[in-house]
Amino acid sequence: MRGEVCIGLASILALASTLLLIFAHVGQINTSNVPKGIYMTKVNVSGYGDSLEVAILNPIFGLYTDNASAPLGDSAGLRQYYQFGLYSYCAYVNDSAGSCSNHTAGFRFTPFDTLVSDMRSNFSTLTQELLPGDLILRDSHYLGQTSRAAYFLILLATIGAALTFILGILKYSITFFLSALAAGISSLFLVVAAALWTVMINRSNDINTRIIGSAMNTTPLGIEVSTGTGFYLIWAAFACLFLSMIPYIISCCTYRG
Ligand SMILES: *[C@@H]1O[C@H](CO)[C@@H](O)[C@H](O)[C@H]1NC(C)=O
Ligand SMILES: *[C@@H]1O[C@H](CO)[C@@H](O)[C@H](O)[C@H]1NC(C)=O
Ligand SMILES: *[C@@H]1O[C@H](CO)[C@@H](O)[C@H](O)[C@H]1NC(C)=O
Ligand SMILES: *[C@@H]1O[C@H](CO)[C@@H](O)[C@H](O)[C@H]1NC(C)=O
Ligand SMILES: *[C@@H]1O[C@H](CO)[C@@H](O)[C@H](O)[C@H]1NC(C)=O
Image (tube, rainbow, N blue to C red):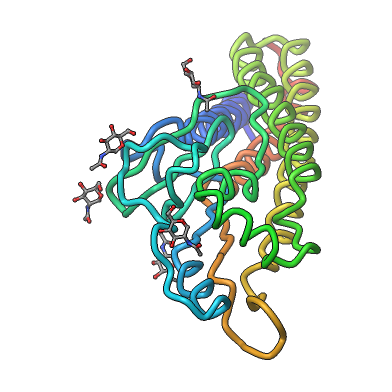
């Protein structure tokens, strides 16, 4: 492979990885179109009202709110679904209206606390009692700590991916070597972060197949956890950055300025 082609390929891969990671950071910072489509995971609770009705054998009033501007986490009523990003979450009353929480670096993914904090107190008490205690979705300590750790790994990897790209443009053997090194370390961070999220999602989505109340009925809980685009962006960013290492190593050993 000719030197310029090799370096060009490495730069494209490093740049692609950086851009994918920037997109992943943008998810759920507000409710406009692009951020709305990017999230790590979605918790859809639109079926929960019906299940609750079956479980308590009474019609349910006031579980949900359809006021998109009602404050979050203030017992103002459950939204239809919640999408969690790297800095905040957004809760949607329908496909076109919702609101987002404040942004924090190292945001903790604590879906159960989020849901319960939106319910009026009588429903939150009921939910605490009805939802099986062994659900991973309820384990806010594990999910919160893990998502926070994954966030910092992704942040460092984003800086590392940008450095990989910038150093690679300088075109010295030493900078190619440093690019390869940055790509190696950052892709290691990314694969760990992506694996942490994979495990978090795969363990919490066992709620999708659970039933509500006693084993006598077969009504699903009506709470569904699913994987979002942001999650795939992280894996794709990892793949690009990891692959970019190869042409950087080749360039570092063969480039003659
Ligand atoms: C939420 O779940 C309901 C029932 O399964 C489904 O009809 C609806 O399309 C889902 N909404 C979203 C945004 O996933
Ligand atoms: C919970 O409280 C709301 C209003 O505060 C009421 O409309 C609803 O019926 C109550 N639900 C239950 C199950 O007690
Ligand atoms: C969504 O909810 C908002 C706020 O309640 C409302 O103004 C809007 O008409 C709803 N949109 C649809 C498609 O139902
Ligand atoms: C929606 O919530 C906001 C904020 O609490 C409140 O000011 C507004 O009056 C509510 N709208 C309706 C239709 O209840
Ligand atoms: C979000 O930020 C605003 C302004 O900084 C603050 O007043 C509000 O209490 C915060 N909300 C939460 C839920 O922390």
